[in-house]
Image (cartoon, rainbow, N blue to C red):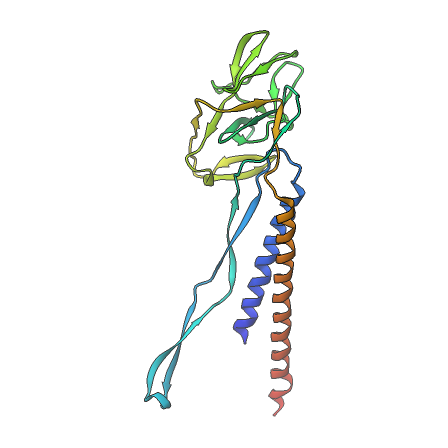
Length: 252
């Protein structure tokens, strides 16, 4: 009976964690370049139950079967599926069609992002909305001036017909090494140095939208809520049974 208590309890904890992730996803449905998170849950290792020295089977031990001990959150996975392209016709807005990440200089080091809603400061330097520097192919800052500029599909930047630099677009062998740090930025937890893309596909005047399917996410929220309530009811039933065992049966 106590095992049932723990199994239902771990189920509730897992569904609560999943609900937190779903709510965060829905909150970022309009965030440029946002990639949704997914919770991967696993079962604890099963216990093998034995029937020991049962006189009816001539004092032999037989296997009764497995006993599950509950579930837990094993991993939080980012879905890097391409989001929809949204045309803005704003020169500082850029999107990457296909694989690749923009490189951003932050106080904590170089970070990576799919969010290309950049801005230009008074000195003509290309920045993120948070004020971090967008890096060029040579690893330095990019100055686009304070007037008009154009960016071709390879990430080359032109001001009045003159090439003033190139966006540093990189790719990883496996995007699974990336972890979120906030501000729609990522870092490689294993220290991997990504490769510079030779032929990226940059689109100026457009932004990549969130890859979140709001309808599916709402359905997931309802399912998660029902599973939480089911575990809650099981927990209540087990608690009532234990209460009767201790307070009623224990008196006889």
